[in-house]
Length: 628
Image (cartoon, rainbow, N blue to C red):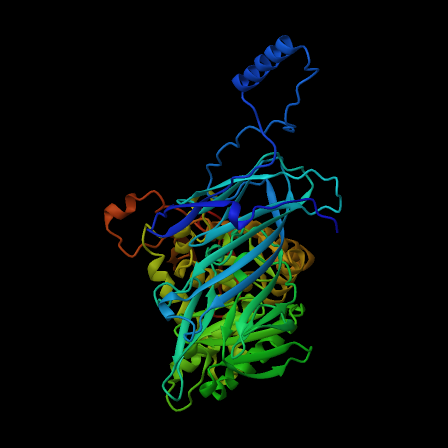
């Protein structure tokens, strides 16, 4: 493919930096000191014209004056984008990422470990612009290139002029001399350098971890944690979940290490003391699902009934303790494949036990766990620890469908990822440990714990307006018990009011409709409503209401109601009413603006002459209406 190209070499780049909002150093300007062509101001042109007139008059020999070919005048400076999200001017389609981590203590002190890399992003222009916004943090960008991705040597090339950095919003802004053409594709290439740090309180981006070998040597390795906004710490990118591009990676490593990425290894080649590993192209996914590991771990493996390779990695001395998690991953993958009738789409499912890591992360094809979760020490682990192991693995495998196959469009809908994973983790764990009756423990472990949090006036709603959540800290605040536990409880409630079969079929429709893309809460309601209409019995169970009408009262409002039943012993009936439950029921609390909100409720009961719960009576309470 012919590529019209404009390159800024490292010798042509001037770098400036300023303090980031949290005291971090960040590259803010990349300029070209040898720009092709020239642009002349009005007074310069008048001066040249005057000089030409003098020369012509004085000598009579000058036939004409040659002025440098300056091309077209530059576009006006782009208007500053004031939002926290990238503007809708370009869409990333593909990333080619290359990383080279320096983490060998034989070469340098661990305090000086760092990484270099480059990224080549294929972008499509959606709206005319001469400024590209993308995210970066804690990276020193050393070169920028912009060139056409179209197979056309005559394609206009928007030459790179300069870049600047918005430290507050973590935007790298790349300014071009001319505007991008709508519908055209371009390559945006950047080189960068970052610091590798071991800090148990800051395991974001790519970070250092270590373990002590049998001979007492500290063994270093690199792992990653990119959710929610830390992909920008690894490579410049459009770090928002609404984008679903593809990726490929090249990772350099020393010969005593191995490298892991989301996709299988395609090839390895030697370059001196280094090995260069090239990995396959991913499926479409958001930036935060990328994962990078360089380590010296051992491996065991198995395979699912549909041919997916499942591998477990840990430090060499503990690999035998990974056997339980390896088998659990295989079994739960097969369970969800059958449950939703959608095969796991990746070629492999790796799980890695990372020393020092907190929790677990569902990276597509490369799930990372804390050692204490993934590795089963039969002599030391308690029953409670083992139960947590089963449910956490169930949680991460559920994410392969809810979160990875379909991603929330923005973080205000993160419950579509985490709420469903919190609901389904119990079903997955129950599948591999049926004698534990884990599903029966959901109410105690999840529902009752979040009811206390949700019973205060200040509790937030499960879904909040998109414009409320913007900054990285605001995004992080969404990863709370409301999202996980209330989200899971809402899923359980939906399954009950719709019926298990109709609910599961509706989820399959939702997943199929939005595979390899993003979805909002309304998209879920549309799929469930469509399924309920296909299943007439489910529509009857909903009392003819749209599922969104019912569920909006539970997702867009905070809290939950207390139900009061007043018996009428004379006439043999009862009156049922609802009011939001507040833990502090003092009179001043009743003045809160959302105290009198109401919820769509399905009440069920049996009577003495019909005491079977297999077919109870059902009454819907709509809004403020009382039921009798």
